Image (cartoon, rainbow over all chains, first blue to last red; front, side, top):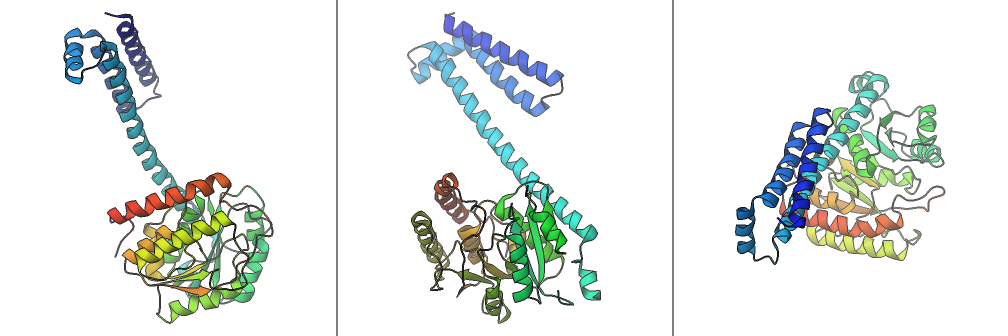
Length: 121
Length: 238
C-alpha cells in the first residue's frame, strides 16, 4: 500500500469515527450520518481493497491508483453537496411558509381586517 | 377605511421608517375606499412602530423573506379575507398612490387581470441608472415576447391584481425578484396583463434593495428562473 492510499484510509477512518461520535452525541440525524458513513466506508474500501482498486484503475485508465481514490472522494463530496443543496432548498421553502403562517396567525388575533368584522361594520 | 372595502393595498416594508408615514398618509388620502395592510419584512428600524401608531393592520414576518415572500403573504391574507382586488405599493415612497384609481380601473372594467403602473409610459418620470435601464428593457422585451403583450416596464411592482391573479400568486410567487417571472407565470395561467402610465418618484430616504452585487446577480437569476419555468408547469395553477 502506498503512502497516499494509507493516508486516504486513515482519512476515511477519521471521518467514520467523527460521524459516529456526532451521531452518538445527537448532533447528526440518522439519514445524514448514514450518508457520511457511506462516503467514509467507500473511501476505506477503495484504499484497502487492492483488487477492487486495480480493476477500477484498469477501467478508467488512471495513471496511479491513488488518483482513483482521490477522484472518487471528490465525486462523493459533489454528490453530498448537491444532496444538501436540495435539503437546504426544501428547508428554505418550509421556513418561508412557517414565517408567513406565523405572521397571518398574529394578524388574525388583533386585526380589524377579518371577513366577519368587515361585513359587520 | 370604508365599510366593506373590496380593495386591499399591500405595502411591504423593510427598514422604511423614514418613508412609511408619508406613504400611508398618501394612500389614505388618494385611495380612501381601500383597506391598507403593511407587511413588515423583519424591519430593524421604527417603521413597524410608526405603522402601528397610525392604526394600520400589519403582518409581522418573523424573518426577512424578501419582497416576493412579503407580498405573497399579503396576497394570502387578501384571499382569505375575500378581497376582490389587491394593489401593491412599495413602502419606499417611489409609487405615487394618486395613480391607484387608474391602476384599479382596468381590473374593475374586466379588461385585465393584472394592471401594471409603467414608469416608461409616463413622460416626466426620473431616469433610472444605465445598468437598471438596460436590465429593465431586456426583461421587458423578454416578457413581451413570452406573453404576447406589450410590456414596457416589467420591473414595476406598482400593480393591481384581481382575485384570480392574487389567488394564483398566493400559491406560487417568486421570492427574490418577482418582477418578470410573475408576469410570465400569470400569462401561462391565462391571465390578461395591461399597463397604465404611472408616476414614479426618487427615493427620499434609504437605499434600494438592489445593491451593486445583487444588481449583477439579478439578470442571471431572473433569466434562469424564467427559462426553467418555461420547461415546467411550476407556478401555473389554472
